[in-house]
Length: 392
Image (cartoon, rainbow, N blue to C red):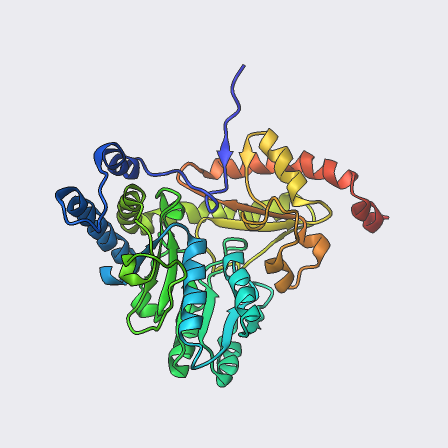
């Protein structure tokens, strides 16, 4: 009996660690112990590894090694940026501007800041999930401690006009942070060209290990540490760095930078095949996100009259692994705040399904997924009271 091929389409949640990154990490795990803060030989070896990785990661986004502050996750970097800069600039303003489509690791700290007395201003988006820079300019008329806008949505794939948004912030003299967790290592990024003062990136999105991430922080922004203790990471993030994971992140960053163009050229046709073929093959399927300004390996949809969780379970049984909305909320059975902000009603948003591509995927996977989806969607709709009511 032939074993069913596994089709993995959830690379934005977790991608395979590059073998080159693993090869970098293994010697450090076996015999690379040493604290970079120590002056002895082992400590200085660790410090050299850390410095090299800092250079590799800085190069990925066009910044200086000094600007790289290592963290454990993208969520930590987002918390660090929003809370740290807002608190550091509270004497200038107690307003924080975010968008309605931010990741929960921006939304949640924004709510925490609101309890501290900050005013949270939330910018709307259009049906494609795009922010209008004019809305930001208007919001900035009353000043702000920080503006944080996601670079590219991991839920609908839309890439924001970050250069225009950053320009509006520069004109107003307000720091601009962008959550580039879903974009770094996937699309070309020049942070200086964008004009962002702070940027979140994470290793697992470009073939590095989980547990390694960074906040890229330009010079000149007053910031209070969120994790306090030692003097690591410019006195802004206490705690001994995870040297093996950071080294793996550095290796993966170098490979991602070298392969950006070729990878996009390979993934875009697969993405576009999903967006073209799936709505044509199954009625009442809506492609979400911007049709052109989107991540190269990202295709997202709302399948009407079903719940995305049920669809995912059936597909997984058939060897196809995808996602429904954000990985941070997919098990919570909550509606998508991103799709809601884009104007989708709650029932439609419940049918969210997201395919994110990686090196293992091919155009042939698209046809396989669609053929497997057809009977599953039909079966789920037959059980749906909403579907039967609308069709009566």
